[in-house]
Length: 327
Ligand code: UDP
Image (cartoon, rainbow, N blue to C red; front, top):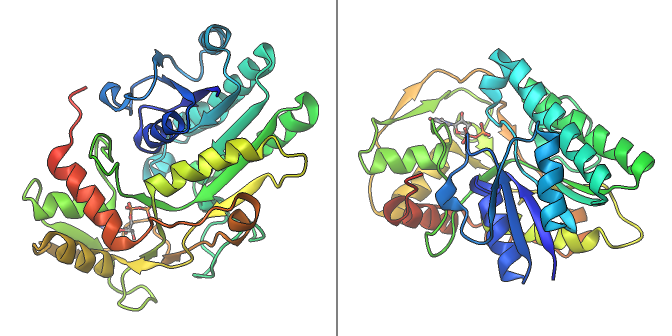
């Protein structure tokens, strides 16, 4: 069993990856600057505090723990913020990954699984995306992830670093025991905001846009259970040992839900109405984003078994009611 360095292991997806790694018998070492992550989310292995841009610190941590591979989640993720603060996104996501890869080269760590995004493909008029889709990164966030995919390729050619990038869209759900879950500050994501509105923790949900060319006029998104994603990352690690590999896999259910369908599912799962009002479109929101996972099924044997909307909302609701981070 192996030591795996998990950047962003104190965040939402990273912490679930740590849980899955520990369950598979590995030791996840979280590397996180705790700016957007939570100390309390690090429950399945040691925490090493540090910044991605601090190459010396990364080298120190890699020398101490001797990881066999890296899972790289640490990144700035808010698309809207990336438009007004591109400098922060290029610095953290791109220069930060450069620093990480340099530390890997310096210490002989040769495998990395990277969290990319289907946003590299941009809005393709609602067509189901996959690995062969064209590219149209529409924000500094998407461009920064796209740049990293190129960087991984180049470091692979020159320095023998094996990599696998996963592209996906919306992530939902939580640990079934509510030990870890989704918690952003500030929160901007649909399902946690719906649950907050249901619980009266904030005012009614704003439904952004009612005139999109979709079933009911609200945006369609493809939601994947965070534990399915964690599972893909575990399978991805083993995949890196194969001789023939594809470098990128999309992870989606191939099925999308509108904002109103998610609200309806939340009302059914919780037995409570969702207070909501119609609001203008949010800048930068494409009408429909859905991606498939045929190649991931073929290459990894991965299928999004837990990514049922009702189940994702139930798991998120349990976390919402029982779980919390103090630090
Ligand atoms: N959304 C909404 N109200 C909110 C937050 C989100 O109507 O307060 C919509 C948003 O326009 C998008 C969908 O919910 O169509 C999912 O948004 P989220 O921010 O969760 O994820 P994104 O798709 O932007 O990555």
